Image (tube, rainbow, N blue to C red; front, side, top):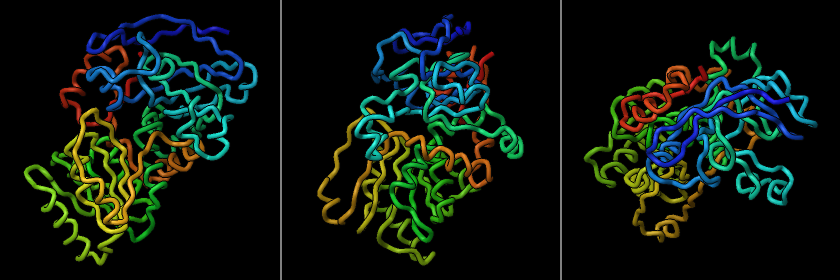
Amino acid sequence: MSIQAHRWLMTAPQTPMVRTAFQATPQAGEVVVAIAGCGVCHTDLGYFYDGVRTNQPLPLALGHEISGRVVEAGAGAEKWLGKSVIIPAVLPCGECDLCKRGLATICRGQKMPGNDIQGGFASHIVVPGRGLCEVDPARLKSADLDLAQVSIVADALTTPYQAVRRAGVTPGSLAIVVGAGGVGGYCVQVARAFGATVVAIDVDDSKLAAIAEHGAALTINSRGLDGKAIKSAVSAFARKQGLRATEWFIFECSGSAAGQLTAYGLLVHGATLSVVGFTMDKVEIRLSNLMAFDARALGNWGCPPEYYPAALDLVLEGKVQIASFVEQHPLSQINDVFAAVHRHEIRKRVVLVPD
C-alpha cells in the first residue's frame, strides 16, 4: 500500500529546500515510518552549507535523526507494524562479511538516511525493516518524554555512546570532552553514566554552564588558552581528585580544527583519543606523539543498531537528560531553522516535527 507523503528536498547547497510530494511505498523487507521528529545535526549543515557531498546525488531530503511510528510494512517486515521506533542513523546490511564479524559500522552496504537514501525531513520515510530500535510508549510517558524528542537518540546520543563504549571507559576513569554542545553534551553525560569523572572543554560559557549541571565535574573555557595551559589545568584537577595522570579518555566532539588540536594536545601515556566530530578543515599534528605516549586514536562512525536499546535505556532511566537540550520546530520552517542554527542563534538541538 502506498501512502501520500511529502519531503523537503535539498536541490543544491545553500539553496532553499523545496516541499515535494511522493508516494511512500515499502518493498519487501521495508517499512514506512510516519515521522514524529527529525533532529538537525551538524552533518546536515555540512551538506547544506559547506558542500560536503552526499552519497546519493541531489535532490535529496536530509535528516538522519529520526523517530516515528511504523504505518506500513512490506513482506517480511510485518512485525514492525504499529510500533514506535527510532531509526538508526546508519543501517548496516546485516548480511555481509563485515556485519557477520561484528564490524557493522564499516559495512559497505550500509544505508544512512539523508546521505545514501532519502532522509527524515519529511512526513514519512521508507527504510529497511531491520535494526530498528523499538520505543515503549509507556516507558516514554513515564520518563515525561515524547517520541519526537527521542529522535536525537539516533545520532547525537548513540554516536558518543558507541565512542565511550569502544574506548573502554570504566568507573574511576578521567574522560575529557572537547566541544560541550550537541553531541559533546551527550558524550559528557554518557561518560559520566559509565562511571568516569568528566572534564568538559568549550569556548562557550553557556554550553559549559549547562553541562556542568549534567555530568561535568570541571569545565574549562579554552578561548585564549594555549594547549599547555589547558593540559596543565586538567592535570591539576586530576591530581586534586586522585585520578590517574595516565590513560585519559579524550573525546573530540567539536568538529572543528581548533578542537582537534586541543584534543590531540591532551595526549598522555596510555591515552585514548576518540574522534567523534567532523570537519572539512585540516590540522597539522605530530603523529609520533601516539608512539611516544603509547596512545591510540579511534574514529567513530555511527553506532551499531544492537547498542541502541542500551543507549535509550540511559535516557528512559534518567541517567542521560535530553529534554532540556532539545527544542521542537515545525518542519515547514526548515529553511528558517537551518539558517538560525547555522548562525548559532539556536543553542539547543532542534527537532523538526511534521506539520
